[in-house]
Image (cartoon, rainbow, N blue to C red; front, top):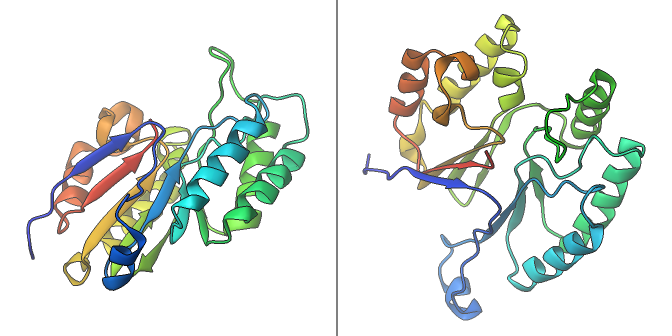
Length: 219
């Protein structure tokens, strides 16, 4: 398998090519996708998100990938109503949408109440069905992980073991893909063993499992 370069992309950004549309159409292997995370909608203005979606749509991405944190759970409003407004704006893209499970807040030093976390996770699962999953696009593999399961609840040993097995299985045959992208909210590749819930040997074995092309995280 050809050597793959590890690219770590962190913060709020868009993976959008500015190549002319005719060049994009000539090569079936080329594609565009947009990446966004931690908009903290409800605390931050939905108008800013609407403007971002309008700009993204101009680039005609194949799909949208969110890295979690799009709705802030600490607002004094029903979480479901914020998600519904988020859905209405996102639908304007008219492309497939994928999301990463990840709860975060603007307010520092304040823990997210358990009922808010439960509501956020329900809203996520109602829309995306699974806490972690993979999908393919034009012979490229995207592996979407649940970093909440590693960081926020590392004592859930069965859950950690199950997701680790999923990661190893997903990356076991990467040689058949042009590229492999791993997306998550918090990157345990950038955390120490105590914070990540994964041993160094496990993380190393995941990275050695035929490699990946890009690690996409918001934290």
